[in-house]
Length: 427
Image (cartoon, rainbow, N blue to C red; front, side):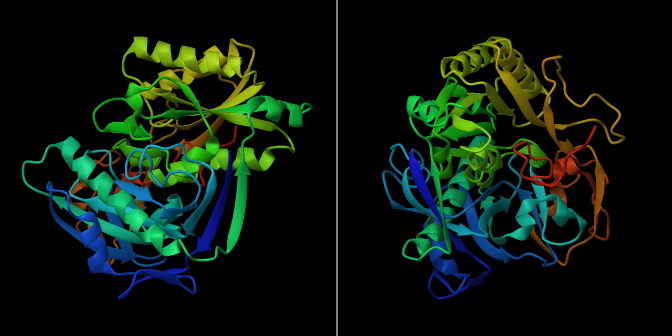
């Protein structure tokens, strides 16, 4: 599959009479956007604000972050099986509003939501402080159940990203990047001298409000399977979960998975990147065994020499991570795992809830229990009343002056397990 991504660099975002991209600025017709996204009967109100890099703005609680994209040539549309018809994507041409994002917030859905500061020390821990953000504040009607609330906000974010993406349909991209995955046998023939490497991406699927969707299907209802890396760049995988903010893979993360991009960069030079396996993270042991068995079997079937395995979340998913690692290694295939750590505020506790001697090549995104103090901001988009109760916060985290003392766990993307962050560690 061959995909051309046309990046349109967005340097500013403003409200205007017409939604368009002009000279690097994304202009947004606020009223038209609100009308486009606010039809859900479970929503009481929808408001839109702008947050730019360097501004004294705090966004919380953050539900999802989505990058606007538009399919300009090829099969299907953005977010297939959700907003577009179910068709295989990942080929043709897609334009991207690079430097812009949709951020959804409002009344909290689950306690594992996050914070984005656009300036100050907190901004250094989240990649989304560097983006021109269109922030949508969604308030649900009274009595709406949590899963209905989550779905309503998820669709608002996706619809807003699709709406903004359309502004780039007829814009000439500032740069075009090409990504291609050949059929397996042809890929092996092209680079026979290079080690064959696959990527195993674990998708969060531990239960209610811990959902990830693949072509619109909840990942907990799927088995481990092969997928083209370019498919996720067209929105085949989207976030629908409320796991801890620091290591949640937002939809933005899926669209811009850095492991995929790095493997493509090394393809044909140091490695032969032959493809991708997606697998889920389950609650029950039997389901964990099934998915990890299939993952190892698929890795063996396609004949790779090594795999990179990333997880999402912590605690329970650590078992899935180690199962995948151990079983793939038992097939004679080398593994590298990408995770983060919950090592206590002093960094002295065991980092993962599970371990094995075969997990001897590890990349870490940092310690989520590290404590940070966030100074007050001039503007808060959303509501800070939940800060004391979100994962990473404690009673008294929110101070009277608006400052916050909290673990990195509460900062969106701080210890991301795809490596989409600045933190790591050296042994």
